[in-house]
Length: 106
Image (cartoon, rainbow, N blue to C red):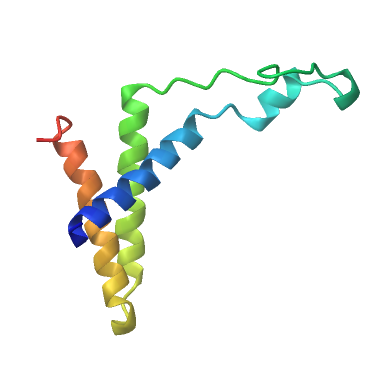
């Protein structure tokens, strides 16, 4: 696998995790539905909660925020010892921005 592919795969996995986290039901809301342990239902799937569905705009905002976060972190790494890490962060941001600029992936 080429080094560039590793950066892309790693970046996309990280961003998918951020999207997955955004779909999670807030803890407070889930706790309101819950019961005391001794009163809780038993069995497979009894504690499942529907995940939030993200709009296209929300997904785009999350991906853009991930790219901006990487660019800001790269800007802060000014010491020569961190040059390689800063370059990696810029490459990751470029992957995300490329997907935002070209949603079809072509």
